[in-house]
Image (cartoon, rainbow, N blue to C red; front, side, top):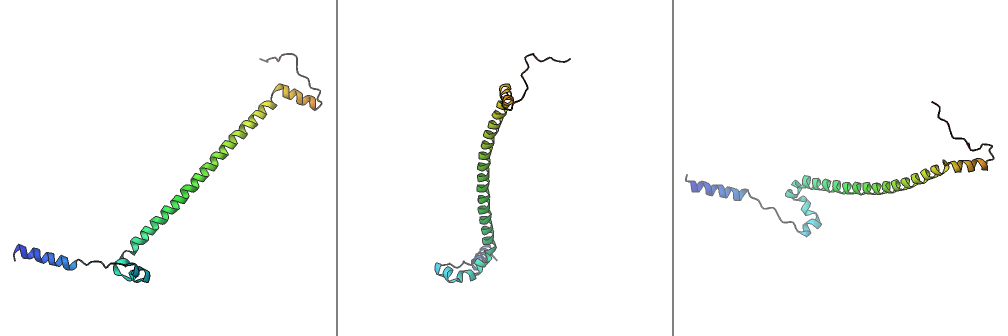
Length: 123
């Protein structure tokens, strides 16, 4: 056999094995005939895979947005806690001043007096 006849047989075999997939029209989809086609049935695992990826993407997006909301809420709580800490710290500083302690003692009617002698360090 010559080389050209072998090539010709190979080309004719390829043409015979190549099957065009049928066209799907909107009418076929609406009537449900498209779901019965063999080539579409072979694609079902891939379609399921795409749907799973889409669901994962949607879930990931919702989780991300929820985390952003939590971060914003926690930032606001942190600012509020800082302000409250400053307020309590200032109140404590005010209460620990000697003049405040003396005024409170006089208000309660205590006999305690402020020492007029300086304190002595014991060695």
